[in-house]
Structures are given as C-alpha cells and as structure tokens.
Length: 334
Image 1 (cartoon, helix red, strand yellow):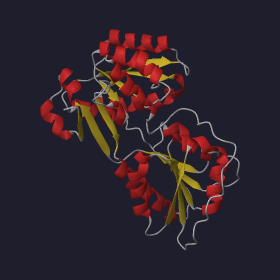
Image 2: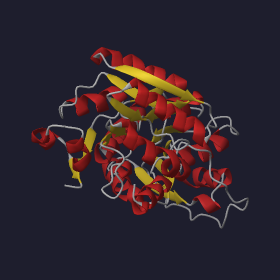
Image 3: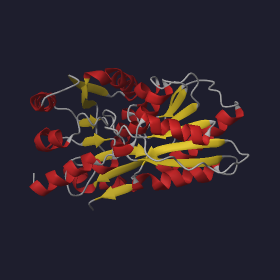
Image 4: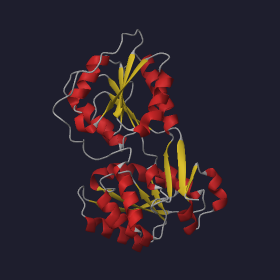
C-alpha cells in the first residue's frame, strides 16, 4: 500500500461526518451572549449542529421544508468553544418547541444540559452514529438512524453479482446489541455474520488478530460499522489497510469518504440520502407539531432513501458485474 494512500485515508478518518467517540473537549467559558432572535408568531424549531460545510445543503433543505409554518434557527457550534452552557443559552434565546440535534458531539452536549433540567423540549437526533443506543440516553427525544442496515447494504452488493452469504464483522463489545439487531435482519436474506468481538479499548494486535481470523474463515465480504473507535488513523494505517488487502473480499462501509479513489479500502457503501433525510426529519417535526409537541412514541426510525457508491477498480478486482453499475448512484475511480 502506497504511503500516499495511507495518508489520504487516515486524513479522511479524521473528517468523518458522524463521530461515535466521546464528546469533544470544551471550553469552560460559554462565550459572548447570543443575539436574540426576532419575535415571530410561528413556533420555533432550533437546529444545533457542528460548524461543518458538509452539512450546509442538508441544513438548508431542512429550513426550506419547515419555514412555511415554523421559525427555524440554526446554531453552528465549534467543538473548541462549545459547552452545555452554550446549549442552555441557545434554548433560552429561542424558546423552541423542538430542537434538532445534528451529529454525535452536538447530541452529547445537549444531553448534558437536558439531564440538568426538569422538562427539556422534544428533540430530534439526526446524522448521529449508533442512534439506537444514543437516543435512549437523551430525555424526551426521537431519532432517525444514520446507519443503513447491514442487510440493505449487502443486498445492494448482491445486485452487483457478489454471491455473498458469510459476512465478516469486527466490532467493540459495547456495540454488541447493535450487531445483534443487524444479525436478526440479515437472516431474512439468508446472510450470516462471522463475528469478531473486541474489547471497548482494543489494541492494534487485537484488531490484527480479528482480521486474520476472518481471513481463515474465508468470508465473502466484510461489513464495517461506522465506529470511529475502530476507524482511527492509527488503526487504519497499521491494521485495516494492510490486512484488508490480505482478506481478499469486498469491504462494505457506512461512510462515503471510505470509498475513495486515493486509497483502496471500501468497495461499496450504502449511505442515507441527506436531502431525503431533511424531508423525513421535517415530516417527523410536522407530526410532532400536530401532536402539540408531545412524543407519542420515542425510538429510532430508519432512513427512507439510500445512496449507493462503488469503487469501480475494486469492484472489478472482486469480479463484480460492471453491467449492473447503472444501479449505483456514484461510481468512484472509473
């Protein structure tokens, strides 16, 4: 593997849009007072998101979908100067009927604030990794999952001609429940997980051993959950890239940036359509409005629309059917 490819993919790992790691380090000073929003008869929906240009189109679409009947405020937070106090001041300024939380780091900040007050407004979690586990920890919340089910991704890969039945998966112990839910869905399509469970703080040698075991098991494909704990630059450089080559099977990922023409890693990805995600989020918020902003049921909904990506060079290497590439939304490296 060329050094340039290692560098490219390691850099991509740092910029994944959804982080499943711990909350960022935050400053104790909440910063200068936020400007007060102008009064408006419409109910307010506060959107709190990281300051990330990649989110701009989704946030714009969400505002457009909601603005006819709601006053939508968007507050962009920088991890280096954000804190639960900043969240408290946003809520005090906006007095929202609902709060939309984008990305894990934002959710964790909001959660710290929401747990300290008796009646936080209803919140909607978007574009956060492992939303099923996260949503249960946030009072008065609902979520739309950012992970596409493994079975959906594998069926998409099958349409390209891969006769997949045994799918390798490496995961940390804390995500065992998530893997179990995915496994139950996989069985409908007669797909079986070959599992390698690691500790919550795995070592480099632990991950290497897991991939060696999957090589011995001769899995048809490897499905990689979006866990930044296993996608750190250190693991990518020292384990994933060199050992995935030896695996000799397509790697199915859950993040667009891991299917990349500069680093041969992900062969196929199934990811949410972010524009459709904005529409789905708006529909859910209209449901909440009709219910007087009270949750009729919490939990997590699946994304309604999926985008598929394939690395053409890797796909051909693994014998996938190029005549079926027209069913894929994005062809990488052709």
